[in-house]
Image (cartoon, rainbow, N blue to C red; front, side):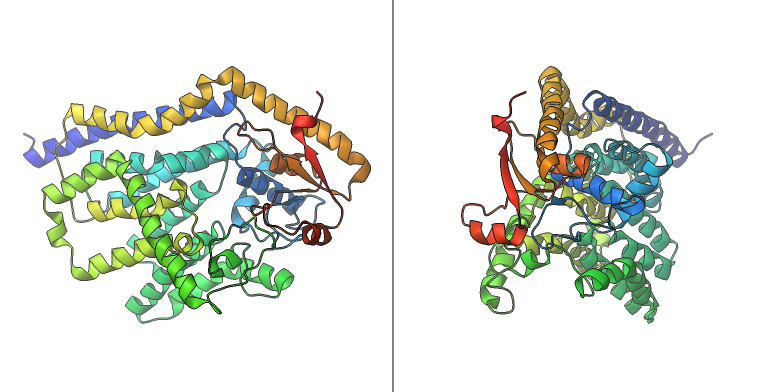
Length: 469
């Protein structure tokens, strides 16, 4: 006869299967949406990743994009680290080279993340339903789903970070720190978190090896930075972080008059305001994640917080703030940037051994609530299928017309004034044609046009509204 604990275990295992079914059903919905509306969810970053991927195995100069997305440098890209474009280049070389392939790879990465999340969380709870629900809540977080559909880098970052946690749970601290270094080659915003954790590992093990392994993971970008920029670490947002006033990466010139070094108090005020704003944005993202809210309720209901030591509480506080530090410094707050804090809070709620007998109605409600936000984004796109398809076709037609104009003056950089319908063509134009194009500066109203013209050399403004199709 089954014991009560065994019965609850079998029940949670059966309920977990419903969660697995919901996850894979959503993956199929994403694949269908990508097939029906190819490129619809793309952003400028999506095309930049594809453009950079073409510089690895082709005739294009290494990491020399056609699209000027920031005015930090006109020759070499400092916008994105190397690993995600390299992955795209490798997979496109092996399978099919298309600017539309990245979201499909991201769906596969999401499936890998889902099972890694279950593996990681199973170390903290034997309740397979809670483990699967946690995995569903993280992978169906709306900001994360947006990254998947748009073919950007966070799904790869998630896989590497979860692999880091697996190594950490196995107490392989040096290898874990090396993997954190590689995470920084996917996203620059992992740098503060990686440095904090590797130093913590070194402190705990009384050895410098974890920190050295972390730095080893950074060496490809350090070598690139030294070769092309004469600096040990460079990114096109570095001047934004140092600026004492709010700035944006596409501003011209890409430099700040007042910085943390010559106007420290103003810089501190900016960062303090960003910290308050950032936490409000994060709170909104947290409140929209029904799995985390459910885990929080259980955490409080079972008084698991009483088992959390002061040292552990401080560690989690510093860990979450380290993951958000780049955004507090830059002032960029998009929900997709909160994927790591969402993950960490979920692990915090789980890791003190929360358990709960769950009813079928709770399972059904959990699935519905978790899926409603990401599904609404997809249904909105598919609900206006005819209109959105027409927009995409118009974009390709725009690119063909502008490219024909550009053929006689390939040394000229084009500024493209977009149509007023929410889709951008400039980064898509540069990625697909190989012609020179620049994003219009974010501070266009105050920019010195003569200085900008002198910086770019030959340039020309083209309005898509004036094109005749």
